[in-house]
Image 1 (cartoon, rainbow, N blue to C red):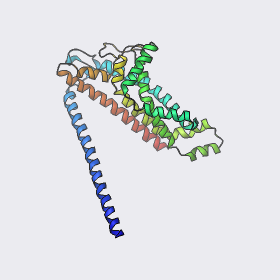
Image 2: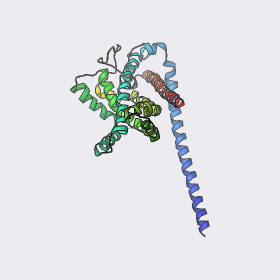
Image 3: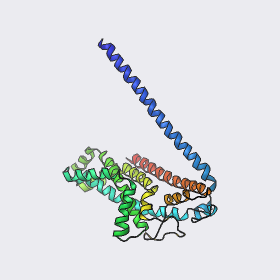
Image 4: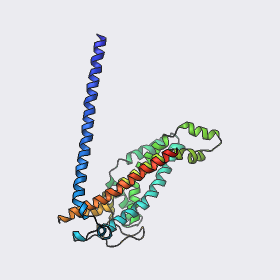
Amino acid sequence: MNNQAEIKHIAKRKSKNKLFHRLFYFSTCFGIVALALLLIQILVQGGSWLSIDFFFNFASRIPENAGIKAAFVGTLWLMLITAPLTFIIGVATAIYLEEYANQSWFSRLIQTNISNLAGVPSIVYGLLGLTVFVRLLGLERSLLSGALTMTLLVLPIIIVSSQEAIKTVPNSLRNASFALGANRWQTIVKVVLPSAIPGILTGSILSLSRAIGETAPLIVIGAVSYIAFLPSSPFDTFTAMPIQIYNWASQPQAAFTNVAAAGIIVLLAMLLSMNAFAIYLRNKYQRKM
């Protein structure tokens, strides 16, 4: 009797396993098909509008003359300022929490707040940037205000991902370094960071990939939807590709829908390039290890 009951229990577990396996498989296929249909629609609508003039023209009220030059350069400016800020501050914070901070109530409070901030809606960061950077610090609606706001947005994600990468470094490597006479900082620089750098770089670049597509914080801090010049310093007014695409999609002319689709293709190409760069860096440093 016990053997029969055990056999029935195993058969029941196998049937449940098959059911959930098929459910997850169907869900994955549904998401892939929906994404493929969306990409096909965007490519069909915007592919014919991609040209050299589209990259070298400023925004225009005439769809045929509209270009993404100012928005593209503004996005590059944002990433050039945001990337070093988030990487330096995020990795430094992760090193402190994992290597130096004691397991006190203060450290746990910081860790809890960082984890909670990673799930805060992006528009809240836009309101924070508007209050602190635009008004309190007097940076106005500049590139620097937008970059600092984006830094706040992705910083919790980079901190968490860097912590997880540092946690994967075996303690035996740290102990071996200490046994050879190295101090804590030398161990971190020579042992911990080289071992954790693939995960740190991957998490950082993927976090920046999220920042490059955010629209709500930039709208709140006042990024303009139309400029006919290129920013020359971090204190200039700017626009970004998500803002420009949103502006084109909201225009009443039907042709602007195709222009918006062309802008989406450019933005996706930039995102895929950043993700491919992250994969390249990860594989490069993993081979060195």
